[in-house]
Length: 159
Image: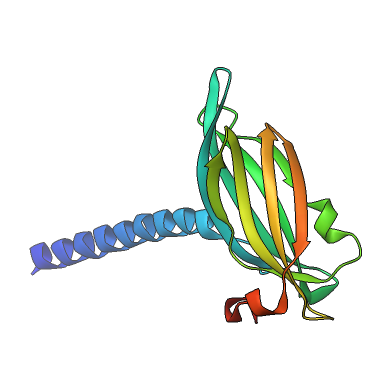
């Protein structure tokens, strides 16, 4: 009987210890996925190489703190090196006085220039703009925006 009691206590202790360890590892890994509620989406697109560095682009779209009907968009240059993210730029040209919601961007390379392309919808006027972001170097970009004709508007931009 004493042997069974010792065995039962031992098993309870091992079970409690293992659940604590398992629970701790789950909690610590869960932190990887923790993001502010204002994040609409994060998307990794395309690969770049500048000199001896190479990596990928990541686009982060967040709701503006002042209005859930307005997005802010950021481009990050992620390096496959010890530094990780080496640059991040907000597309200030689209954040100034406008109220846009963005479609997820697409990536393509054209004539040695990396391009992000997406549609920005003005939430006040419901006008759509084709946006092209030329990624010209680490932390360097150029934004071009052109109003889309009414016939070219897509239902995918309505939210």
